[in-house]
Image 1 (cartoon, one colour):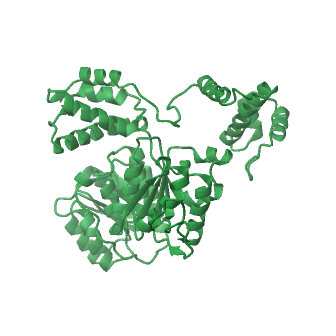
Image 2 (cartoon, rainbow, N blue to C red; image 1 turned 135 degrees about the vertical axis):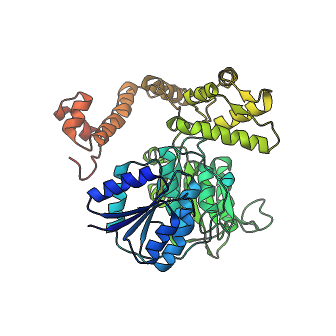
Image 3 (cartoon, one colour; image 1 turned 90 degrees about the vertical axis):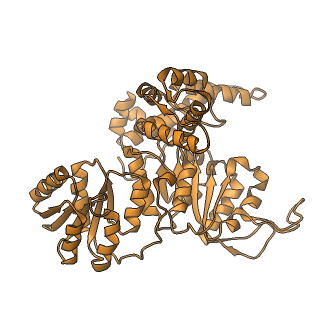
Length: 481
């Protein structure tokens, strides 16, 4: 579908590339290097789609969007920006942009986005939300890697909604920062943000902590106490380490999510739950479901929008910005302002970071506090990394472990747990079956259920694979062959 596309960017090279690419697709392209011309075209009713940069010589492109939307609410606007932060994505979305695209971008991605914007059905313009806080110094998340950009885009779309979000990632990746950002930049930012860590609450107290209790509900309940749901009314409730929630509390939480109301422990009057739920875990909840430790129906209620935070080793290009941010943060708290030389930064990028962003933050604070030199070199960083032996959190999965070592670790746990009551016989076959089942299941998943390819991958005869699928009662995903 041929269309007139208005392009505004002060970089002439970008204007040329976009003009050539979109013209080849049959579109009429008009390009300018300033916001004033773009506004004049829009005001005159020209253009079917706008592609605009943020920083231009005469006006910020984000500030221009509301003015365009007031006179032409149906006009789709794509925002490009080299200021690829969460705040940029949020502001573009809340001002009415169709999509935010960080620079540098793949031309194929932009072309696909243009076609989607031109073909998408028009929806009624939503009411403009209250502007988000300004200032990059308050940014809750740091990073310009491709992985973080996608997270920013997803979060920006979630800000004006009350959708339940499940944040997953290893310990130290910043799951609570995501929850706080969804609250602080979302439509409930005028309400409270309340967090509860399931792993830190005794099992027998979790229901009382969540839902509150009445006087006399149990021994020691001398007064009525409000729970976290009540404390979070009108705001956001962050359920951290949801994988550690006991089964009986999971049942009550599921009922709240289904019915939108709850009762206190010992109470009878239903209370309306006006909260947005954000849950987080470092555990594999699907594995917990197979083990009978987590309710599958609750998982799907919580996992409406999943956000996976990548470990730091998967976004090493963000390490310089993170380190600089933590050094500036330390200086603002009274420590001497330091910087890292190139060799030190390169060494940080080579580290595996089992403790993720939290480990990096702790190391940077040590550098700021313990060393006199203003510019920290690679020798200091090397010494600190050598001294800081990683200690895994209890219950954490190893960041990187060979198959043999993983099997040995689990077998040691099994023997330790059953030292007074090992089975009389059959342990060898039982262990093989425990390994065979996930191996075959994962192989079928990797081959999209194709049993011929799965048999080749495993080095088995196809009939042998079929026999094992029957013997182990493995369910092949419906719709796959």
